[in-house]
Amino acid sequence: MRDRRKELLELLDRSGASLFTLLTRLTLREDAAEELMQELFLKLSNSRGFEKSISPDAYARRTAINLAFDWRRKFRQKDKAQNFAYEVVSNDSSPLSKIIRTEELEEMLDAIEKLNENGRQMIIMRYIQQQSYEDIAEQIGKTTHQVRALCSKAMTCLRDKMVTVSKKISDKET
Image (cartoon, rainbow, N blue to C red; front, side):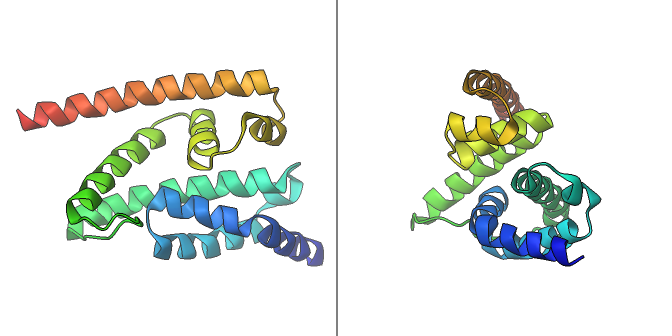
């Protein structure tokens, strides 16, 4: 038990800030990211998968991504029931810009959520966390060329999902 606790503390020191940033970007809320960070480390402390994982950082990142998208699904249901408004983390001060940005980010995250797990991970690592192809390749045990191909394929799927979302929105408006 001591080894796991020590490993978790080292992970928190090494990757805590980047995991928090990732959770904030995926939920669009710092308060939710704080709660999810706590939940993440509780999950990791009780997880046999974390204990057996070859790359604890990658396992923690994947768990954080899953937690964030689970939170989004749950929040979306609550949001519809309660019509709850929240403010997106943004530097732009114009109310109209905030509304537009929020809607665009929500649509994008909804489309990312619909990708398969590998595609979602590629999009998040490359375009949300802005990691280099080399860093991603090292983390997932692939070549840089393979990572580029995976990112390209994931981006193509994401574009297809966004076109579908746009068509549904335009159909509702007419």
